[in-house]
Length: 158
Image (tube, rainbow, N blue to C red):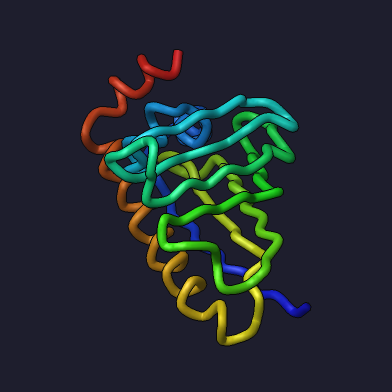
């Protein structure tokens, strides 16, 4: 099956350690991604999970992945995804991976996310487009979190 990827990257006026840290700290994930709950076992072969919705017994969405690569403060790769929506399963089969790369840059760091494994067919077009918009919103959430008080987040990550 032929697949496609989505890449989004932006510069943040933050230390690479801070930027990497918010990718694998549950309270930070809730803040920048708007998740109601998050669980992370931050190690290679660890767990990365997030849930959305007010009712934890019947969530709107749940995403669970295995941490395939954990190389602080530079690289985090998620795979072996399990995805569940209250509305039902995805209308296609996929083997998603998400790679986060944090690179030091002048005045901060560059965060690049590559999400791969989207089927080429039209059955995945809406989900693919939703993920593209989702990453733009997610990066806006990260930016807002940093602007709202990076010092508080740094304290949280110690």
